[in-house]
Structures are given as structure tokens and as C-alpha cells.
Image (tube, rainbow, N blue to C red; front, side, top):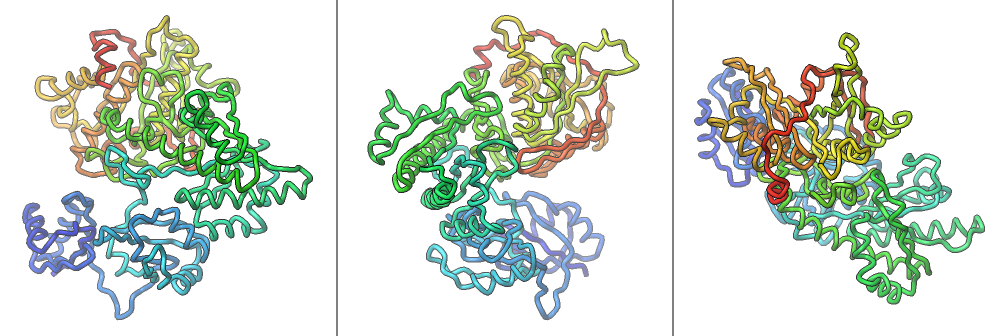
Length: 627
């Protein structure tokens, strides 16, 4: 008899439903014991059945939950602690991850906070990892029984058993298509401070910033390594609106005291805001900003629109007055910014249907750039001025997250210099802004240069990174005049899909691919030479030709089709196979959370040069309606 552990079960799953699931997959089992907490133990008739059950059901999506199936390991008489991690129960569901992290940072250096499944929809359970086991034990001693937002916390050391009560999930905010609450549209406060003030804000060994965090329950990130040598540094403050305002006020008090010590006089508050939100802060005829100034007895100015560019879409709102009044003004400004942000998120929901698998806020970070009048725009330039959680569960059944994808973009050989920029400055900006790996293939040595009309650009990154990197290349092509008149830039993009999915993409009699072309306004070509019985490891090239928004929609829809067919949320061909395609081209990348990227040079010129064709495609009007 072989016993299996089955975790992450839906809350309404019972013995008969689980037994039926095993029967549906031709797996024979005897005893099934469903436990409270979303897990069960299943006795299989022999080891071979257990092995097949793990192969078939581990990672299987069952009633919206991704199952965990693994051999059951008998536990000893004592629960075994798994190092420097604690389980926290009884957290109110509305508490944000940032607030939890701020609270538990009082006990030590928090490495990560992960959400676990909870049977009670009004409460949540999290797994917190500390730097050392001593810090984890201190959290248990100090915070177990601590009342937080009216709920007594239950904090215990993580063990194999209690970790199984809920399958670990990446912490994120569920996106349902329309944002109806601030919980779904987390909006941090970003301010600028003089670089010489950063040391005072952090304090000796981080004492000052830790004290601010403890007192205000807000998380404060000082971007010390960004813009080295710059006169000002950005600070991002996470938390609910009141906590952000309190933390900002504490920072102003510290900087004011430091300024007095340096004989610099009164300080001002400098708030960063995306250019697309500034108009609503100013208001018609300046009415909104004038009212804020009158109500708070402050003077407020906004930096010129001429100060922004493709890689910096933020404007600076400068507030002058007493610290108390500046804090009141910040609260009113942030409230207006947050409301505008949520309105924009709602407005993006219908357009996001054209781009499955892409977070709607990723479709707002290029707003204000050259294409913004012809398609959706997006917030989030550079070091993510409005960061949002990216590892979201699903949108229309399609996972939204950090899945690494590979795309091959073909550009005219004559445009390579413009894309690279002086001493590589432009391509470095693209990498920094997008967080993607971007590599331009070298000229083939064994082929005459005059026959190489196009160069292949290999882009590796998340769906959001793909969008941004491809956008910036399209935009640079438009800026440099590589198309005539008012024509849109049309480029060729290739993605790899499993050969077994080609038939699904084409559809009966070509019905699916024709519909994709009609809806997206792009030209889609699939390799004609397919083996009669392709294996799961074989891949086929899909070639997409068209303007930026057309090829983006086609890419996202095709990847969604493949992902749905694979039945493996968050992975599957759209991500893992794309990554394998990258390795075939000789390149690899690693994208960091701060938006920077490292890449290893590699790649060869493609044997499939871009074809700038102009065969029949929907009119721009049809394309606009579809988008």
C-alpha cells in the first residue's frame, strides 16, 4: 500500500469528489481521508499507481485549484521546525502583504512573505521567512496572541505539517477585470529627497528607517542605487493611505532636522506622479490644485511636461509650507492620484480582453508616448513608479505573472544603430525600463552583408517586459523615420509554440487563424513544413506581421490558446517552451525585481528574415474597433 499527500484542495472538496477525480484518471485507490485545511491522504493499491497519480495530478487544475500530489512522509511524534520560517494565522483578509511585512520586520530581517490558502474567506494565513531561526523564534515570542486590527494573531514556527495546511502561493492581488476597491489597486507614495539626506533617513545600521516603519506600519524603500551620482533619490512608501502619509511626515521631520544641521533652511516635499495623472491634480483652470493650496495653506507647483521622456514619465509635484501643512497637502494629493489611478484601471478592463495574460496596469506604463493616441497606454516607467503585484492568479482563466517568454523581433539592418544608441545607451535604457533581456544578433559572417536586410532581436522577459521592450523598439523606429508619412511601423515578430498545437491555432479549414487575423489586424503565418506526427518536444514558428498593438494582441491570444491547451497554469508552452526557444538561440537572461536585467550575449542571425508584406488585412478603422 502506497500513501499520497494531496494538497491545495478546494474548500468544498469531499471524499467522493476526490475519489471520482482518481477514477476519472484510471487511478485505483482504497482509503481516502480528507482533512480540514484543504488536504487529504490517499492510499493507492500499489507504488506504480501512486507514481502515475503523481505524474497525472501533481500540478493538475481541479475546480480552480492547482493540486499538489506527492508521497506522504510519516511524521514523528514531534513536529519538525523547517528553519527560519513562521506560520501566521487569523490575519484579517483585508490586511495587505506590505503591512504584514512591516509588522514582522520588528523582529528581524524578513526575507519573504507568502500567502497560504485559508478556509475562512474573512481571514488569511501567511508564511514568513526570516534571515535566521532566532529571528523567527523572536516573532513567535513577541507576536503570538498579539491583537492586530481587532484579531488575535496565532504565530508558530513552520513545520512540515502546518505548511501543508495551505499550499504556498505567490503574494499578489486578484484582478477580476474591474477594480472596485483600493485593495485591488495598491498605490504607493513616491517622493524625492536630497541624496545627502538619505543617510539620515536610513540611520545608523538602518535604525531610523526601521523606527519609521515600526511607528507607521508602512514599508519604506530607499532607492539608493538608482541614478548614481544624482542630486536626488526616490523613496517609495507602501501601505494604506494613512500609514503612507504618516511615514512621509516622519521622513520630512528627519530631513528638516538634518537640513537645519546643514544650514539649509526649510525643506519642501517633492512628490512623483505619472504624467497621465497630473491633469487631474491640476484640474480645469487649476481649480483642484488651487483648492488644495487654500485648504492646506501651502504653495504647490508642478514640473514642466518638457522634463519627461520615453524613459521617465513622471512629473514632480513640489509642496512648500510647514511640515504639518505639507503632510495635509500630500494626503489630499495622494487621495486624488489614487482615485485617478483606480479609474484608469477600470477603464483599462475592456481593452485588457484583447491582451489575455497581461496585467491591465502593464498596458498603461507607456501612456504619454508616441502610440498613446492609437492604443492603450500604461503606467509604470523605469523603476516602477506605480508598482503592482504581478503574480496574479488568472484573468479570463489565463495566469498573469512573471512567466518568462521569448520573442524574436526583426528590424531593418539600417535601424540597428538607432536601436543600440550612442555607446549602447538606448538599448541599455530599453533593458532598464522593460526589465527584459534584449539582444541583437550579429551579422552573419558567411553571408554577404547586402543580402542581410534584417536583424533578429531576441527579447526574453515576462509578458509586461515583452510589451515594454517591443513597444520601445517600435517607437524608436517611428521616431527615426523608418516609415514614411503617417503609416504605422509594421514589423515581424516570431514566437515558438509546440508543434502539437499548430492544428489548434490554424483551426478547421484555417478558421481560427483567419479569425485571429481579423480580430487583431495582423498577418499570421505558421510554418508549412510540419511533421505528420509531431512530438511534444518539437516546436513550430509562428510569424506575426503588423503594427505594435496588432502584433501584441496576436501574441497574447496565441500564447493564451497554447496555455489553455497545456492545462498547466502559470507554466506550459507559452512560458517554458519559449524559454527553451531562447536557449536554442544561445541566449539566456535573468530579470531582477528592481527592473534591471542581466543578459549573456549570444544568438545567431535568423534563417527566416522579416518579410514586410502588405497582403490583405483589416483597415485601421476595423483594427481600432477591435482594440
